[in-house]
Image (tube, rainbow, N blue to C red; front, top):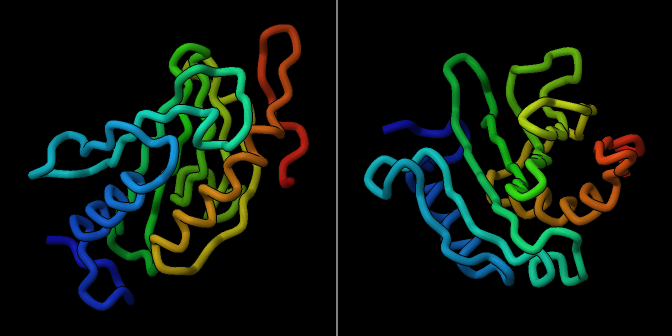
Amino acid sequence: MIFLAGRDRYTQRTLLRDVHDRLTNQPGCEEVRYRPSRRRPRYVIADVDPTTFLSDSYDAATARLEIRFWYPAGVDHEYYRINWVEPDRNLMLGFHQDADHPELGPCHIQLNHEDTPVDRHEATFLDAHPLAVLDDRLQQLPAALDAIHWKNGAPSLPTWPV
């Protein structure tokens, strides 16, 4: 059992259950599930109807949210990845709070296309309860998606932060 520091015995499993419940009640989120399984959750995945989720028309007919929180040893805050994935366009836009790109600080936004990172920018570090972080990032997601610029079939994120 992994306890998340400063979260008063809040476990990773409890957190992912709460993330699952949050997405189950989010308009546009369909078929919310755990990966690899309910017994050993590491991620919460939700299929998304973009038009309903974003409350606006959108170029992709389907998308997916992939959410993971974890607490590595020696770090005093949660790590997370909150990814918007569009399989048909092989596009991923995600907020990542981890140690992968220290030059960008503790948190960054990343845009991948065809499984290759094409843009990364520093994002505000949010030192809050993980569910508050999730809510903040989901509120920022529509603006981040609007900031994607397509040119000759290739996306970029030239105007972050928005």
